[in-house]
Length: 475
Image (tube, rainbow, N blue to C red; front, side, top):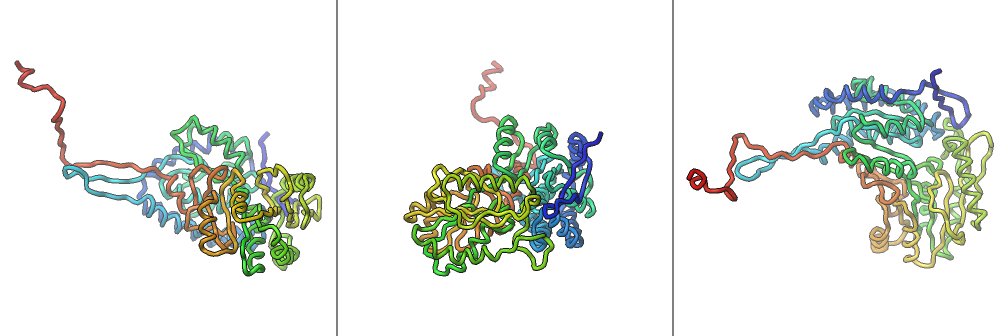
């Protein structure tokens, strides 16, 4: 009997899509067969094909955004911005490839020429997440295709419909079907794809737990590229902020955008002990006004549900554990319907909680930590094995310079949200947040490898040292 994967709408629980589970062998074989011809195409041909893809997505923007909103639960306005990011990724990737993978020729010794060019790896597997089921995998796929790779993409089993449509749009734009394959399935298919000998690398966005497992697995295959983009237990410090209303707005956006389901969301709010009330007053006014609702509701909600009931229950359990350990509830995590994964934004003061778990609570839970001075704030910001994003709200240039210098993260913002990362810059972290393969603008770096050639039109060869005298040998 054929296994079927079903996708349900978080806001209603209704099934909105189903498809048979795919076959890993079939998808990898199709990509391997298509790779040589695609890699042999001139860069201009691949570039033009991806520009057609951008136009195709633009033509389907409304229905694509509608599907993303329904399948993820995120508000329609946010799903629309995700589709726009898919479109914009093409031009950004073209510029990045030109800058970071450009061909260069320069003079070598004895009249030779030295050429620097780049080659694609071959067939790259892409494992996508559910929080940005189109934008984040697309951020791997577009630069991979531009470099000449073929791709086997396995979308998250929680958002397979979006992944399938994304691949169909590549095909509709005229990119050969074998060059971009969609593998429908769950964890079993993902593990099989990652372990398949027919792939030349894997580009991953997801949890640190899965990323660490992949890192161990790929330790025995150093010939394969592995790019890991993982989560974060991100700090946001509010220090000497003059405009507390503006600071509160930045904190709320950092913590609760996308229902807290961005890897760059702020998880920990660091404040000077005794000053927290000045920030909490405007922050709570915002939090109490946040609309949590269906993706298509009017007025538009700020937050939708988390991805499913399992995720909601895990967040509730983590929240309850913090409270049991002594956290002070400032705003409770509430679930209006036990059958659906809608959660209200929650704020806890965890200053007095001993042995706080260093976990990425992937949802709308913000933990406040009070510290005596800025040195303690820096220490607390680094009190994590993760290192994705961080932000300082307030202070002057000298304070931010100290923050930037001592905080371990790949994205460090000043008076901007933790989730304010520009798409025309690299995006990635250190520690458990990544393996030094930043994505976004720097994705070009892991989608092709440099090849250096010393070239001369005439054959010239001579050995002048270390040989016996030919006269002596004749004698």
